[in-house]
Image (cartoon, rainbow, N blue to C red; front, top):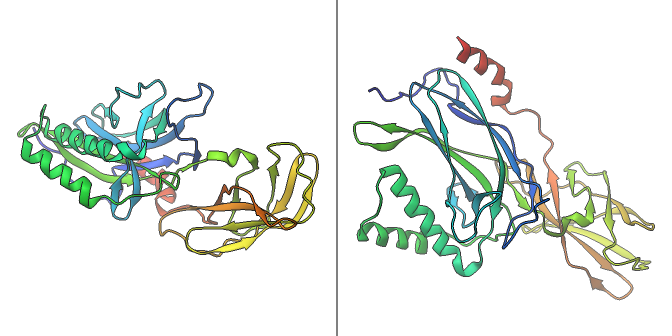
Length: 309
């Protein structure tokens, strides 16, 4: 049985068509049944074999680094669940769309992060090698990899969904790479961003937003609304006015540093009362980069036509 060979037409075997929404409330212990779930649409260019797509959560993409967070289905059991889902696609010569939905990002407590990372690495190796257990040497290697190769990242910062495609090699009975890992745009834990309406703005600035009162009208006469990020950028909102709903204001343009591949950037918004020099707890706010379509999006229709031939 032949193994699928690399394609020479320049079109990808795996790509994301519809990105997940950038703001998502991570699950910590339990979930609200009314809480919205992640949705992401991917396209798989099939072959004469079944294609298996491993989905996982990454803390960064350059270089790729697995996150301790896990992608879990809506009705998961915190003490018993697969550390990453596998999507199975039947053999086909065309392009197949798959909607990843009803999933959430499960955040793990700090004391359990290394344990979950080790579980992911062990499960990944067993699945690729199609074996039921690892040798003690394999376990030692993976434990050292977790201890020395993985950096600690702020769980509240951002994560990426990663999708990697495999096919089964019948000669070795192992999983063989069919398409390299592709990554979504970053996803942020919205936390208390529900107080902001909306909590996303363009990097050109000028849009109006509302910071809602969480407990009555604070009767603040003089205030600043500061926006800042972890790279040292900071600026202040303008045209601030107050009514019975909260503080209305306009955001400044974002002139800070962008991650090379990200189309959004998380900053913090903080209310500063000048009368008593008090500062409220920062709220997360997302700037979106002003970009047009990516090159692969322009080529999408061409790709579909090619695969229909």
